Image (cartoon, rainbow, N blue to C red; front, side, top):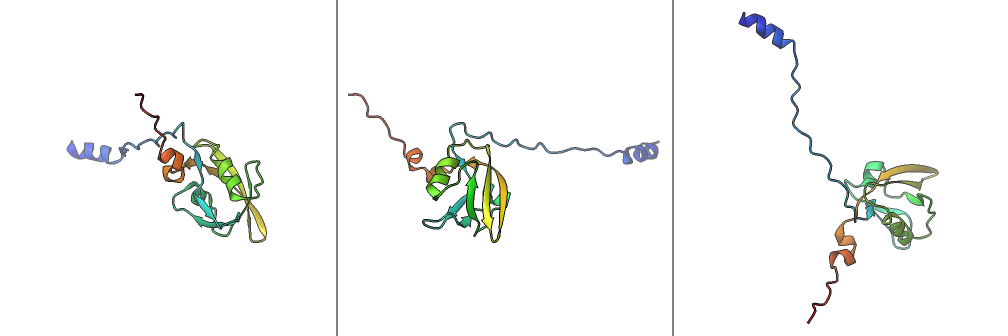
Length: 130
């Protein structure tokens, strides 16, 4: 009898899975972040930070930014201002010139690290009332 039960149970597969933690929801007061740096006075990517939306989307060092969403920037400050106007979790389309071809990528923005925003890093405390 035990052999019959073992045979019957042997044919069944039990799917026990460990619970998968949910992604933490984006910070509702956060600012968007791609994870790239560019050369001074340039729109050419000089570094793609590991494990960031830019790396996940496939951006590479040497790509020249042509368009971010509807913005056709002339300097990187415009790119930063535009991207940080979006909340983390938003999807932004970015077009780059890679060699002789243009490529378009979709990035799901992450939260901009606090150390990149000095005003958020060191909030101004109001003066205590006398």
